[in-house]
Image (cartoon, rainbow, N blue to C red; front, side):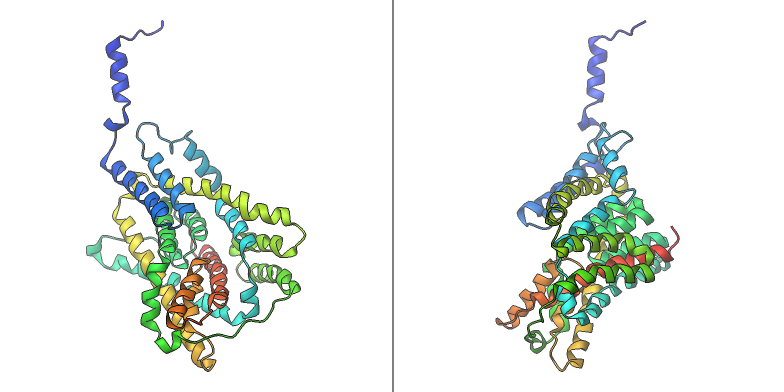
Length: 386
């Protein structure tokens, strides 16, 4: 027998479904955070390609009643398809490889050490996150997989942070991704004070000689060499490094221009949209607003600062060993915020010496940082039980 409803029943059901009556204060706060991320992207142009999808995803996932992240919701489908298996970060790495010129690194392989030094921020923060459990009044304690996920923020590599966190601590994906991309966007604000504090004006004025021309054969052999070396030493990093190098091979081979352009444009753009929405979807109010989130944001800033500082300090050492031929500023580009960190180096070099041209020299450690953060993620995946 079919149920009958009066006007009062129908009106009551409608009122119960009103979103405004089901909003929690956590929902309101995260919706405001989503709007703020979009503001930063539009007004300040901070990582707009990621912050706009992430911000809008945060708004959508906190709309009450509908449950877009619940089983059967559209955001849940996107998350399960691309984040859970790690597909989206790998495809992003494919696009990054197709966009990246490794010529400066090949021309000056010594800059590899600068990119490696910047990864100290990852492992230093890992130890710091674990040490927080020794301070009872803070009320913060992280497991080893959680600490590893937080530490990778120091690499300033969003896709790597998402990939590692989705494997080790998926419940922290939202805060880790927000921290990683926020600090990447704030590179022009965070790095310069550290760079100036650790270098003298005389060091910042150093002009570096023009790099040699890299041959096509070197460019084509480079992806093979890096992939094979990674497979032999850190197999867990091969998914990330392999996709990065495959994308670069498409670029440098010169015979698959259509595939290269697709990886550089259509593919990476489509994946970026879905990746951003999926990350934003994890920012559900009840899970995001916790003391751990604040701890993650603080530790992420520490990791990024340490990575910048260690890169500059090694740059100073290399400057002395080379007889003043290396500008230590380029060490700051060892974090893998490509190409923003290299541009910051160029700007700081020009401030000290208007004739300085450091951009291409900084791109060496900058692209090494991309490789280094992926290798660091592979090391953590192989060492840390998860």
